[in-house]
Amino acid sequence: MNTHAIRAIYRFEMARTFRTLTQSIASPVLSTSLYFVVFGAAIGSRIGAIDGVSYGAFIIPGLVMLSLLSESISNGSFGIYMPKFTGTIYELLSAPVSYREVIFGYVGAAASKSVMLGFLILLTARVFVHYEIAHPFWMLAFLALTSVTFSLFGFIIGIWADGFEKLQIVPLMIVTPLTFLGGSFYSISMLPPLWQKIALLNPVVYLISGFRWSFYGVSDVSVTLSIGMTAAFMLACVLAIRWVFKTGYRLKT
Amino acid sequence: MTPVISIRGLTKTYASGFQALKNVNLEIHRGEIFALLGPNGAGKTTLIGVTCGLVNPSLGTVEAAGHDVVRDFRAARTKIGLVPQEISTDAFETVWATVNFSRGMFGKPRDAAYIEKVLRDLSLWDKRNAKIMTLSGGMKRRVMIAKALSHEPEILFLDEPSAGVDVELRHDMWQMVRKLRESGVTIILTTHYIEEAEEMADRIGIINHGEIVLVEEKTALMAKLGKKQLTLNLQAPLERIPDALSDYALELSADGGALTYTFDAQGEQTGIGAMLRRLNEHGIDFKSLQSSESSLEDIFVSLVKKKS
Image (cartoon, rainbow over all chains, first blue to last red):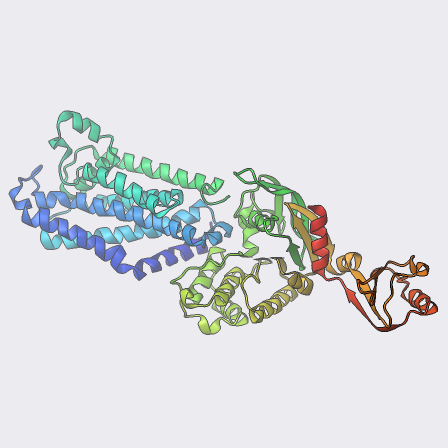
């Protein structure tokens, strides 16, 4: 494996992050804070506790996931879409690298950024709401697993997209609805029985449920299933990227 | 000489059905400067694209430094540097960062001294901390060359290096290319500027409609296909060429004031002496004479015309 290439890509991508600090870090932190102010501090006190957890605290894992998912996808997709757009991709294609270097470099950087963002949001939440973390190790594991998986997914979108519109369409039209309907703001058990079944088709349900379990020890679906589903999705993304770099899909003519 | 690149039976058909390369066979010798000449759309860039990994070949194989560019792409690509035709660089990075990035991408550990040398050779050292977006087009082209050289490649591809470049940079570049060749680097350049090939190349390949029309040593090519002409400006105009001179390939200008004699530059016996004596015998006197040699451009145009 070409470790120098991984280092070069990772460094390049992180430099891009720090160059655009306001856009990539500050704005998601701000928008999440607004949710905490509105749902946590303001109207949260009028909403009853769910599963014995105050509403303000209950929504924290879901809100972190909301930002994590959209930011991971955006980081992952922009990292590869921009070289395609500006033409500098020629260097990546002519370099002695395969999907492995590309994943470790681009996706690694995108995921690092997301993990940093997750921590920042948790710190910010502390200002508004009191919460505890029951299983810190699993909290970290879910944070990292989700960041990596959705950065991979974003990377695939970045390869697939051939215009800025396509780049935005999947996060806006698919991921945001899935996250809102995936239990960010409520427990799946609050839904009518039929909708509970339908909700289980939504992969984001497993992420949020597992992540919430790591905080409060309660979950909608079993934790093992949460981890299993996320890992399966991650593997599917890795295989897709491997295929892309083997065949040159959307990259080579 | 051992070939550093060998292309066998290479065919590329694009998804649109367009056949950019048709069964191309080509060998590039180690340490030479090879110029690939051809009109727009002839297949030059596709040929480079396949060798460097930007284009998937449809049929055939390419080996670079003994490694198959598809099966053994890591080993092959480490040896190759590419300067593409289009200027595409990052905007916000500094020159220093982007050239070091390239070195890393090609699997080499950092080497500040070497990168400094590359930047100095390309007159980029003063600009090392400048953001690329602030540079002029010519400077950006230098940055792309620096990136291609950052990992000390054995083979350098320059795709239309002179497109949109001023005279000064073009001469700098030629000098740099010669220096690289002296250090053992093989250089393959594509160009529209015949002057460039004429000035630089050891061997010339002509490609047209996806086929290699001809590969030849530059000097041999010019000798073989080059024509020489001798023009005599006459003292008194002629109405027609005298019959006694009809066995020479002579042409009379429209006003009858000049005779042009075309001969093979390669031939030992040009027959000029005998012809001049014959003119003398027939009382045809001339004021002045000049000779000209066809350039590579004339050769190229006539070859491409013949084939199409």
